[in-house]
Picture 1 (cartoon, rainbow, N blue to C red):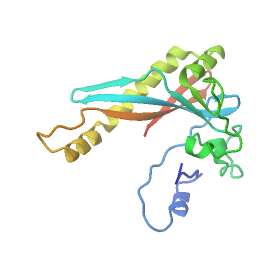
Picture 2 (cartoon, rainbow, N blue to C red):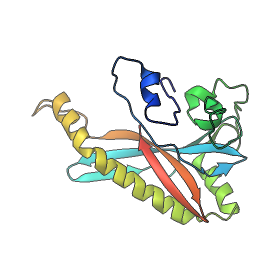
Picture 3 (tube, rainbow, N blue to C red):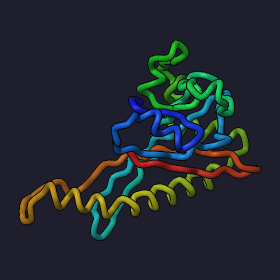
Picture 4 (cartoon, one colour):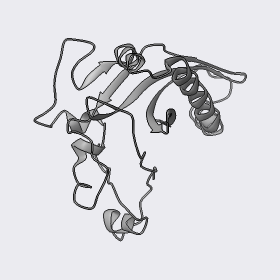
Length: 189
């Protein structure tokens, strides 16, 4: 969560990072996120890339969901700094007075993906479609980073030398509500 800022205008980025140029990742804020218990959440999946050529990937069927610790409100100038409302990062929310440690897989600030999918299905969400969208999103995201992975792999492991033959990648997925359908958006970490 260190170095994460919410801004309303791209020109505000210069104010956050200062005069010294730095590398940064800019991500569009997901409007109208799907909520559970009035809380914004994301899905953390783990992906194994067994081979880059040919590309062979496996997606774990179980994952984590990470919840904000303050009820969600649409971002405004007044609440933009309320990170516990807008950011799902565990490293931030664990410091909130509202963070709930739980032994249950279906309650608390960290829950299993299967328990959240069960809750969503009970609310009428088409879980098969959501899971299908997530798989498609993960595949497209991995395909997008394969050239970069190949470069790092070739730079780190000299030709003819044994080295790792697979990669584990964490994928964060957010589900957005849009007029009776749910859209998934993902980011690789």
